[in-house]
Structure formats: structure tokens, C-alpha cells
Amino acid sequence: MNGARPRVVIVGGGFGGLSAARALARVAVDVTLIDRHNYHLFQPLLYQVATAALAPNTIAAPIRAILRTQKNATVLMETVTGIDTAARAVLIGERRVPYDFLIIATGARHAYFGHDDWEKFAPGIKSLADALSIRQQILSAFEAAEISTEPSERRRLLNFILIGAGPTGVELAGAIAELAKASLVHDFCSIDPSQARIILLEAGPRVLPTFSERSSAAARRALERLGVEVRVGKPVTACDAQGVVVGGERIEARSILWAAGVAASPAAQWLGAPADRAGRVEVRDDLSVSGHPEIFVIGDTCLSKSWDGKPVPGIAPAAKQMGAYAARVIRTRVEGASPPPPFRYRHEGSLATIGRNNAAADLRWTTLSGWPAWLVWSAAHIYFLIGFRSRIVVTLDWLWAYVTFRRGARIILAETGRTGEIGGVEPQQSGYAGAIRVS
Image (cartoon, rainbow, N blue to C red; front, side, top):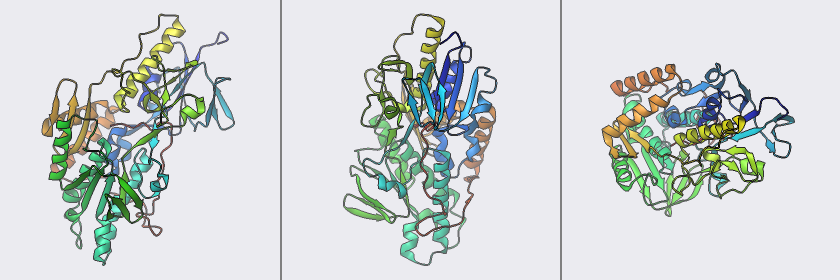
């Protein structure tokens, strides 16, 4: 390290990367955080931006503002293109950023299980750009149905298909159902938005497969009370601009959303490290890469079996715990202290909301559903939002929506565009850095 302060480079400004940067605030190192965006995104509420419940700035905060008081931190808005492990440098095109320690927290992207051509028909939600594009698509579908004179076209426009019934799919389905059946129901003259079909498709046997069977059953009942059609046990076999095929049945729809799976960023390729089928880097007990003790991989990007022998889930609390732990390992090495014990993930629970007054909560000590789970979900998400202003604004927006059944972010930014598009917006793929999947 040539007598200078050790250089710690963190790639990704999501939950894991930001947690690591903050944990190094009082350590004698120079921290450089690199992300392709200039903001940290609170992804658990991203679906609410996509369904017009929240404005984008309520769930995003500038990374520079978050770290402005941290004297040892530098923020670079750049896109990482590779890692030179031999020379210990992060590659940003032709530029090289040297490191003594490297933390990779680049998150995940959409995975289409060998059907990458489906992405242009069924966009996923990983970034603000994705959320705004989906919001455009959903709201424009109602507007297009209002002016359509063809009954079959109206039905197709008012069909909304969600592929994948994990937390993202369930939350999107519930939010679209409430948007159609409550918020928009009195806003149109020629159509009845409450007649919209929201269809949730899951190849597995039940919704919320990572939750308990009790929570899964309660979530399905809540969705069906909202009018969501839940279909499980049959995978989607075809997807195009006009609809999907599931179980041999063709369902026509102009709005198809993907929530079925994710794959890790290209970190394993950058490092030449062993990875699983989803591209997650296999890490050691201290979250470092085999053969490279100076490189740590955390969050959705890594495969760590530190949850009682099971892979750590790709959720925000796990990424934050990993970030703090990696920073702790670096601190002990810099200070010459004894290394901490192996990383162990502490699972406090899983949360998913199904709409107004309804949620599923599998907590470490109990299982909740309905109104009590919804209160826990609301309180947890407000508490973990970054910034006092965001907490206040989100709380007020939720109170307003709760009392009035109205959503305040129902703005369509672009005019209807090319044939086959809704809202003139093409689906956008999220970047790697900072795109952390959160349940």
C-alpha cells in the first residue's frame, strides 16, 4: 500500500454498497463509490412509482448528499466495464481506478430463462427508468381504451398480465387492481376502469413461494378479493406484443410485466470467478472471492450460504448486513486487529403488501396477515427510507391516498408513439451498478 492510506473502491450505490461506505466513515481509508446513477434508490417502493402512488424523488436520494459529511468518501457517476484483478484496478472505459480493497455490490438484472426476446414485450422493474416506463404503459392503456371504438381492442388494452408471483409480482398486481378499481373508477366516460383484468401468473404451486404456506394462502385470498385472477402451476410458454400463452391458453393483452426472475450482474465474468447458474459469485465465509482476499462481493451479486446453510436471499436487509460486514473485515485488516467471525445472515422476516389494509409478514417470531401485517409493512418501509424529507413526504402521500383513494403521480410524460408501443416509451433495461432486487 506504499505507506499511503488504503484505497477502498465500492462498485454500486445500492443498499449493500452504501452500507459499506457508511461503515467505513471512521476508518483510515479513502473510499471511492462508483455508480452509473447519481442517486440511491429505495427499491422496495419502486412498484409504487410504477403504479402512480409515489413520485420518483420520494424514493431516491442523491448519493453525494447522503455521503456529504463523510470526509473520506468520493463519489463517481460512471459505468464500470471490467476489473483488472492482477493490477488491482476498476475499469471505466479507458480510465483505471486503483484499489487496495474492492467491494462489488452491483445487484441484479432481469432474467428471462432463455427467452431474452421476451424482454421487449414484458419489461421488468429494476430502476426508476423502468418504473416510469411501466407507469407510462399502465396509464396510457386506460387512455387508449377510452378512445378505442373496437370492443376487442378495449378488452386487450384493459388486460394487465404479471408474470411471476413473488413479492414484486404480488405487490404490482395489488397496486394495479387498486388503481383500476378505486383511483381511476370515476375518471373516464367511455370505459369502466374497474372492469380491467389483472392476471397474475406463477409457474410454481403458490404465490409468494419464499413465504410460509399460511402467508401465501392469505396473500392469494387478498388478491382475489381485489379482483386479481391468480393462476399457478403453469409456466408461460410464449410472449409477444399481443399477449401470452399459458397452459395452452392464449391471453390477449397490451400490458405485460415481468416479475419472474433475476440474474446477477457480470461481476463473475469481470473477476473470472466461479458462479452459480444465475451468475452469482461464490464467496468465502468472509464474503471475499477465492484467491482474492482483497475483493468482496455482496448483495444480489454473491452466493453466500450463510443463512443456516442456505443461500442468503436477495433482499435489502441482507445486502445491508453484508455491506457492514465487509467494511468490518477491511477495518480489522487495516488496523491489524483480529478478523471477525464468519458472516452469518440474520433473517428478521419477509414483507409484502397486497394493497390497502392487506399485507403478508413472515417475521422471525410470528406470522401476520391483513391489517396488522400492513401496519408492520408501512412502518418498516417508512423507517428504512433514507432522509427525513422522504419519510415525511411518503407518509403524507400515503395518508392522502388512504383517505381519498386518489393517487397523486398519475402523469403521462410522453405522447402515444410508435405502433406497438403504449405511451411512446420503450422498455429500458436497468444498469448493473445500484440495481439491487428487494423484496
